[in-house]
Image (cartoon, rainbow, N blue to C red):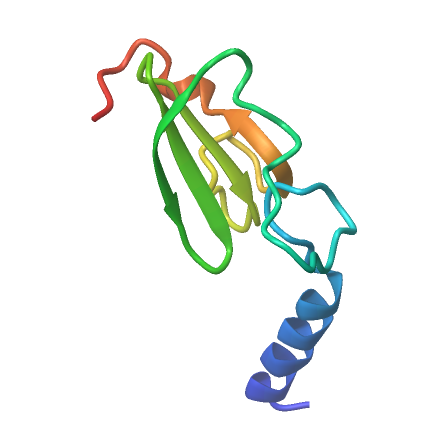
Length: 98
């Protein structure tokens, strides 16, 4: 198959496996707005950013949390693993994040 065709097949397979970010693996549809089941530990989120593939949250104490598609290390956890619920980015611990 041509290179473009392979990319399209990969995207279709990926779309079929996607879950709703933050609601756990396998959750594909919710009929009403639903609070995320996992909080950021005991921390309060003061900012959130989202894309089609991953989300980030900044907690009141300056910790950064990410979840979504790991891709080529996009979540900041030092691996390519998908995270379906918020996970603190340890590499930013002790850094001033605003």
